[in-house]
Length: 361
View 1 (cartoon, rainbow, N blue to C red):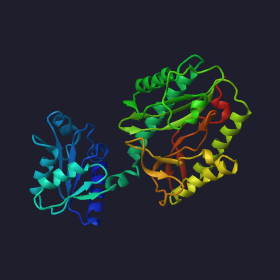
View 2: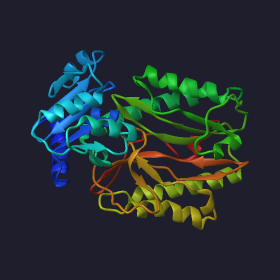
View 3: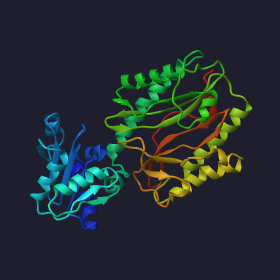
View 4: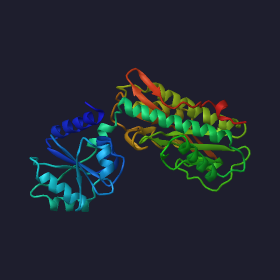
């Protein structure tokens, strides 16, 4: 059984557990996950014994090549009307839809197109399956991580005072593409000096100074899968305060990574980092969760935070990214991509992170 067949089989099992006979999948990433199709403007209608790939004339040739296991339907009507027409020709009597992806207006249109069947909104049926990666997915993420790491090392080797944040971010994106990335996994963050206290800073025309600290948060998308990493680099040896903050965050991150293994509560991983930062007196300066899942999207399930009520499962790939942010001064965040294994963490990020390595001159 192929990987795609295994994924579809798991979704069918989930549908049976919910006493549902069919599902209309419309989220782009979920369609890709289940079919292998790399385009957009498509949907998958799945029953217990059939699967129909619905798209328009722009994508039929591509879909025939990338999703040959599905019955291809080239629509001439709206996607929802086409899906309703296919559903009514099956033996199914119940239809799940992605409640978090289908708008209320679209839901009403679909309900109107169906004859006597009310669609059942369900959340995260496919996303829950995507939480645990198979070895093929993990290998793709290793490649994305390698591309991103090599590009970062190229760009930081040439980093100098006088460059703007925006120019450095552009150089980083271009370096990833030259190495095989389809695109950056998200808008690359390059934030110098006090702007590094903004967790989601956007690169600007601000010029990097001779002794600045610069925070990088970047990732590559390679063969559909993403990477995500954060590092802080120093253009001159950092002063005592930067060293203090940096090493608190680094120790917190290492403590959290050391707790990662199958069966561990997600909130306990968060606590390993958060408690260390709080004990150092900076608990109020670490406001976000410790990490998130990465895969077809750079932010996906699961979420590692202090109130998480789930446990880690072997095959999950998550970020571990504690930070300390001091407005008007600056911030430090250190982020690695970590695969959950039965006996401990597999750190996919292969970049040094000690403060000596972070100092460029």
